[in-house]
Length: 438
Image 1 (cartoon, helix red, strand yellow):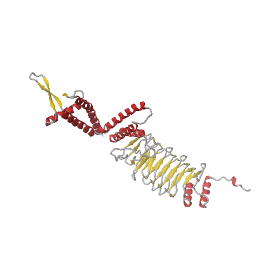
Image 2 (cartoon, rainbow, N blue to C red):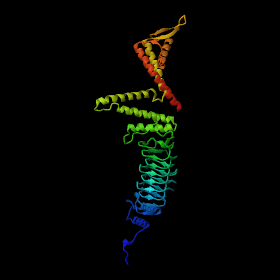
Image 3 (cartoon, one colour):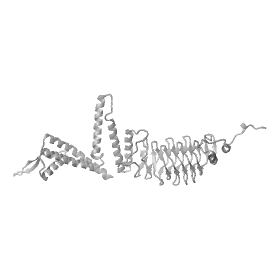
Image 4 (tube, rainbow, N blue to C red):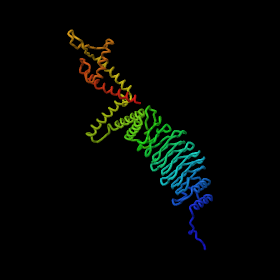
């Protein structure tokens, strides 16, 4: 009896063996997905398939199937590797093995075990994770990724993330991380490129092995799970730390204010006052710039625009003065300099305009009387000392100013000194407290 071909059912292993035979004969290549979603194959057979492909036509390999066992890559794969199915074991790139292009775990792809890159193994371009890794992602000290490590928003990691080896490009952590994340690379600094969608289940410490100078924080929801213990995490070329804002997609001022506020709170919660003061300064600068941009925004309704613009202008002037006087309450030397300068300038004005200072003297019967000493110009060190003392007392005596016979203009100057003096003193005290607390 003749058996028709349709009556035969090939096992999954026979399908792979047949495909390997076709590759050797030049009848098939791996430029298209080599397996179907219904195919279940052993990891050893997949490795034979990859090896056969590399000998004849090294193009990117797409695997949309269930792979049983551990996929251990110990040879050079000249192309990229795309995992669109499920790997029931772990994936190892080790013992000098490499993927010369990119390793891509697609949205429908998953690794039920771990992904290890170690023992002189490396990925020549990028590691892109859009699917799920149930276990650990571990780049050991003797492993490397020569491109970027990207965990997209849809990507997730059920185990720990540990980076001890080199990642030459950026590390984008936009996915979900159920385990701990540790950055311990001694080979090179790990440059974080994005935390926009990162969801951390456990505490994450960004230490001295990490750089956040290129990081995009917009939309980052897990500030409460982070501490920043590294000394040079952010760009501090201008003297104070700041985040990068010149991305391709425009950075909104409102986003910038919110991010600096979040970073300031993280540093405050970890009792890092210098870092908190840097981000407080940046937050206030962003707020001032935001007010400046909206102070004179054009609107067709003049009746509404005028009071709104006046309020914005007043707010901008307040913030500008706050920065000029004491760097937002962070610089006691600047506030003290303004206090001293105000005393000297006002003393010069009083001396030039002429002022009659009051002194108290005793009569023969023991009663007191006021003596008015008119100073029209500085004629002696005593006169200079008297007018400086008068200006100083006017600034520190809010409720009981020194007595003198003043003209109308001099009275207004003394009112100004009585108003500005306590403000400058409070700025000196508060900024000194902030500096000492560091």
